[in-house]
Image 1 (tube, rainbow, N blue to C red):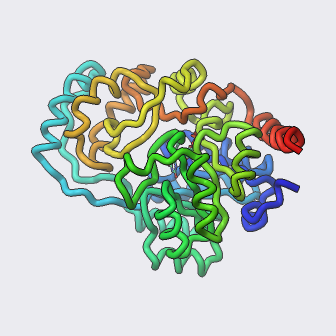
Image 2: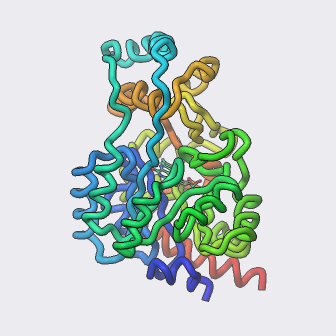
Image 3: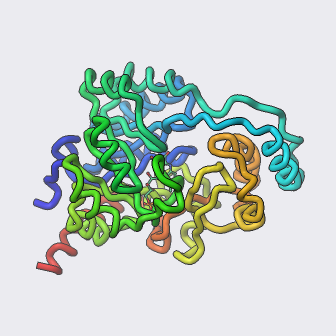
Length: 356
Ligand SMILES: Cc1cc2nc3c(=O)[nH]c(=O)nc-3n(C[C@H](O)[C@H](O)[C@H](O)COP(=O)(O)O)c2cc1C
């Protein structure tokens, strides 16, 4: 049976289909539980969450499902604070803040939740699966997770990153192709040099490592899953297709953008966060493009644009929001998780039957 892969066996799930962790309120407990209850693996994008919020959310998920799910965090980065650069970009963005009725930005030195405390919650709550992106997890945390027998999943965008992650001790890894929506997980080479399409990336990684490889990047339906399995992946991780599910926490204006835009309308940009990410083109992305070189590194720029993006979401102004989306967005539909999972599974079977 196609669904009995090393991944589904290791994670004890019926189907090797992972709903991607998507930080920023997309992955509600209802979405995660519905995926896990349908035989896949739901994932909490907890990168931006305060430690206690992670604990509460994990407990909520556990009330909705007794199946496995994963919690995902961002490996912290500590870029140099260049105050001249920060002031310069804040001046450029002041106009947008004015348009959204926001006061000038107050100074901050807090660039994200404390990672150590987030990890403590992951361990204390003994989450069923732990995944991470944007780098390498310190060996001490790997040892602690292993002591709790929590499977560990890393993210690679190149063969080199995959090899390093395997050597580092992760149990499985996500091979994130350049089609993928949201932030790139690149941590070794230049981000622009690490834009390898899913079809090129997956078999090249599969040839070099022994742990299960999970394909990610515009896998939207059973055809994509079948193709990934044929390329040697042990499973898939899909993000964009779950954003328009009824259970998703994605803002209605973002969902609408996903349903009405096409594959020609996404771009990779650094202007929202300082890190390369794929989203639907809008006014903020296009106008800020000329200032891209002056954008502070992640996570500084992410914090500088945070209340601007939040105000835009409250005011339902998609032109100023980060409308993360993968290149497969034309295949998004408004649908329940249960129905989507059912169609995905049937789609794999149909696709495999077709090429027999
Ligand atoms: C809205 C959004 C948010 C994302 N946030 C995260 C995240 O918090 N952690 C992570 O590892 N990956 C994140 N990703 C990337 C996904 O893990 C995955 O690589 C991607 O969704 C796959 O491509 P697809 O969106 O075309 O299916 C995000 C993707 C999207 C679309």
